[in-house]
View 1 (cartoon, rainbow, N blue to C red):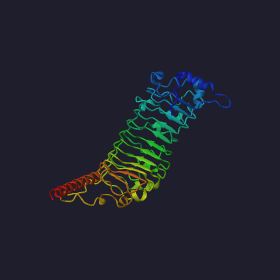
View 2: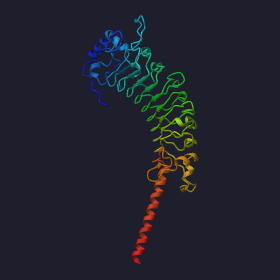
View 3: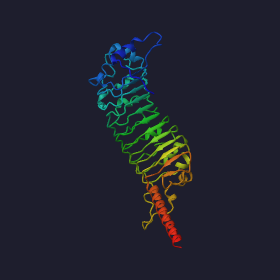
Amino acid sequence: MFVKKDLRKVPQILTDATSRINEDGSDVITELSFARRAPEFSPGDVSILLKPSYRPALDHLIQLSLYDCGLKSLIEIERSPLDEDDSPLFPRLQQLDIGRNPLMVNDSLSSTFHTQFPSLLELWCDNCSFGPSIPNTLLQLHQLEVVRMTGNRLQDFEEGIGNTYWRQLKVLALDGNGLKQVGTGIGKLSRLEKLHLRQNKLVALPDGVPSSLNSKLVMMSLSSNQLTSLPDSLVEVGSSLKELYLNGNQIQSLPMGIGERLLGLIKLNLAHNKIGGDATLSGGDEMDDDSNVLPVDFVERFGLPEALSGYCTKDEKCAVQMEGNPLAERRRRRYLEEEKTRAKEMAMEVDDDDAS
């Protein structure tokens, strides 16, 4: 839906929001979007937002967007030692978007940043430059349900996530960073519904990620990493898992139980891995029985990849992609060779008929 941009300047918008505060609160503005207003936030901070005269408006905000505002620092959002009542700047704010501010780094936040958002549930900071670890003050936002930090510079996964920090998470999106491992605490996030970890440098998942405790997990994306295998605990998630994206890795084999225990799957992308890459005999010839490459329960439910498409189509309720794997490419090559031989035989039969 197209939303018309408010053409007023930031001070005008804040002045109006402040003036609407009345005794019964019936005309209070709870959502403010200042997205793509970099010139108004020069020199890259939010001092214009924090003027004392606008404090009443901030007190009632539930959603605030500072997306793509050319921000360099939010250091002014902190607990003030001069504030006698120690009240937070954004007491009711539930959603904060500071995404696409690429000059934002860990030092752009004060150590008490978290104290100013006691009600925050969703934090969006995609395409910033946080890293190599998650700022500690963000980890202290214990009530968060949604965290999006895609396209940052994260390399070190915080082991405390799921154990000490962010235990209420429903959505965790860390795509497009440089993560090499994840912590076992993810397997303890009982409310987790979506896990986005694509385009990192993961070589393995620890056993227990995911686990039976992730009973509400609906979607998990691990595509474009460097995974060579999957933990056996993957199948313990059970029927809640609907979408599993594993394409673009180095996976050589699959654990038993994907077909038998992940009964809720409707999308399974295994394209462009290494499944079936060692399916050769001692003399170098290819194995004839491709079903030995995959777990029995997988083949029984999904079947083998079709020769031309690379899709497994036996289960009509689940789309399974396996193109780009040695197994699928071998079946494709074999099919094309058979078709070529068949075409030659038919041509010879036609020539024989013409000769007679």
